[in-house]
Image (cartoon, rainbow over all chains, first blue to last red; front, side):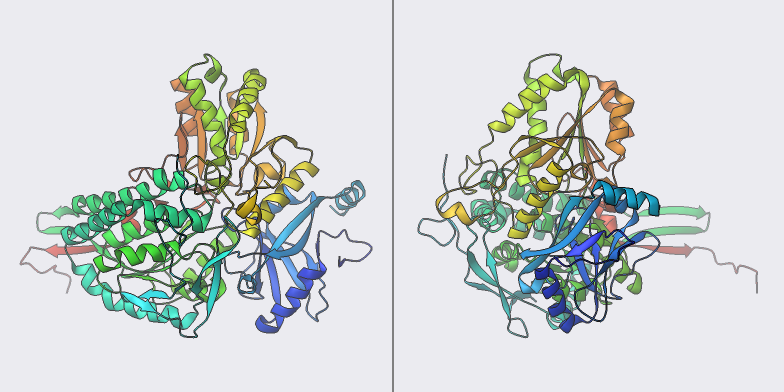
Length: 133
Length: 507
């Protein structure tokens, strides 16, 4: 697993090696990429991957962190603020599985689908997040 | 009891073609780049047909055909369009079993549901809008003695529709029937998980429509969905899906200044007040079934009653009875008419559900039953099956706040009426809800106090064409079903007419 973040900031989001490899491959075709975590129906509750600039984030979104997948550009991960309030106690890892997710996420034609795996923040992480306010 | 043979096998009532092109201008048209993708059945995980992998150039062909057809179709009389819709309904009814088995095979859902609900509802939807368009009238207002305002409904023209995979045919028909009744031509993109059954339907009904009125283009969202949703040649986009794609579609629509309707899912509460357990009678039995409906369609319903809220004073006994009811669910071969719960629609859907069961456990929710992949035997071993799962926890856990879209219900207690409404509304979504009570006053007030577009009172998961369906909050914009849906596919033309011979006197 590829860690991101420095010693002073609690990492909220990470990426598996498999997912990082797919992101690098997709970047060749689409340019720099970003994620926005979806909520709701059908293909929701899944991370959607778009070329940077395709999906407009705004004041209603939170940038959870940037994934380092070995490219010059970091891959930012976003989520709507309202959803973040319900997710903030969990650490997220972007993984990939065989599948056929729809939506406009760029990996769908490859027969693979990004997937969020979650774990609870440890007590230490939670305490540090509280200090960071 | 019956077990249908899989499509294409000896004795099957239906056969899929080995390959499907796009349905454009009333005929099959190969994708311009000649690319196809494989379509597996979730029943066994094996591919059964291949489907056009279209791109922007195919969407443009479909839009050409739709624009060619729209003016004449829009000028047909309401009576003519109603006849066409009724003929479609009749043709579907004649082929109900074929369509039902085909849909079950493609989606993984239990065929009993396709036979009893999905396809009959789709048939009725065409008939409902055939009637609704005949009965629709414009309005006129007398502004003053010399001036009259006439209001006519006119079709939008060409509309784009993006269909989800959980009810491949019914969700397509929810969008098609009102659009066609109102006189629009359609370019429709099915979900890439379920692209074939709608094409099988077009094969059956295609001759009933003028060429170009319905065009179906398959492909992946990023390759075919985006060029449709962002296209300046559509006058409206209708989408069922999830929040991030919904926002993206609104962004595209803002660039073209066109309206959208969005249905984006929910986390529907199902409230059981103490008086449901006042008697052990038919109503109590009905309410236990109402709890168990979380497993309908493998939980792959935007209005899945995935949060059950049960009053404290009856909690223990009610849950014991409810779990017994869940234990009687028959899961297995979707083509067996005894099967109640079939396969999840795709592998990634299966993986997502399992990842939610994992975080539910980590957060300390208690698994009361189920909680994993269902291991089936023989041909079904590689299908995507999840055991109906009941969690006990509290409303701020993620399994209470996010749509899992699987046969998973999260159960919590409430103390009193105020507590029930507070928990029910503590969600980002507001699509559906259920209220169960023998007390009409409680049921009415709860129905009004819950912020959701559809509140079922003493029933759940019923979808008649004549009842409006849609979301509050982040569940979307606009409605589906009901004659009000015609407005979503029409412009209002106001003709403001002066019957005076006199100048205004201003110049």
